[in-house]
Amino acid sequence: NTNVSISSSYDDDVIITPAGNVGAGTKSPKTRLDLRSEERLNAIGIGGTSQAASAAKAGAMRYNSGTQDLSYSNGTSWITLAHKAPNDFVDAENSSAQSFSNGVQTAMTGWTKKTDVNSSFNAGTGTFTASKTGVYIVSFTFSLASGSIADDSRYETLIQTNSTSSATNKVFKCVRSYPGTNTIGNRVAGNCSGIFNLNQGDNITVSLNQKLGSSKTLDSDSTLTSLSIFGL
Image (cartoon, rainbow, N blue to C red):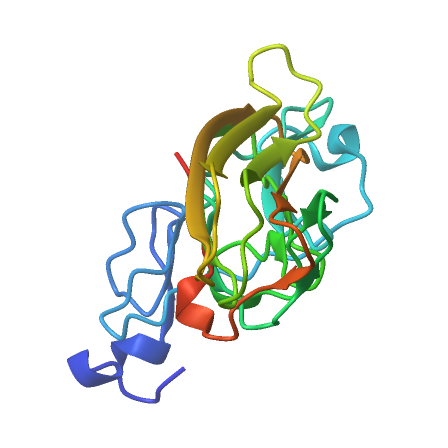
């Protein structure tokens, strides 16, 4: 404590009032423990405990380092305090020049993340994992390097989930065809989007099945192949 109790030194004073209230940094504690000093360094450090909730008694609190949350004792069990985690949001681009064999459905991999709020997207494998149950909007675009296109050819872009929930579609498929005779080389590009009702831990991947007559590669311009995933 400071030697002289003046207004400029209250921030490091500890005071016990005749009513039994304890103040740290305030000369007028309004509760049994009052830390509301004008210095505004009033965080409370709460650690973990191996005590059972019944031993800690009702009203006790602890910090869980594994799950990084707080829980309180109701006298019988430790109850996790409710908190709202941020929604998933992923924004990624692809400059990998990945190759796609003719007629083979292949997942898009080798992404570069621009934004990943909850670290829920594996850029290497292209797999998104929902951090919580909810509605997710997925959209992606792609562009293949310029080349020949076979006659009466087509491609399919697919957004898929491994979810077993009956509340969601399992795949959104977008198709584009090139009917007739194609004699001029061209750049093939497209997009697809879908809405999913996912459970926590469900995955989403995007893939391409091109039937343009020969193997194709993604354009190396990263801005032409992109993926966005929004959790609502």
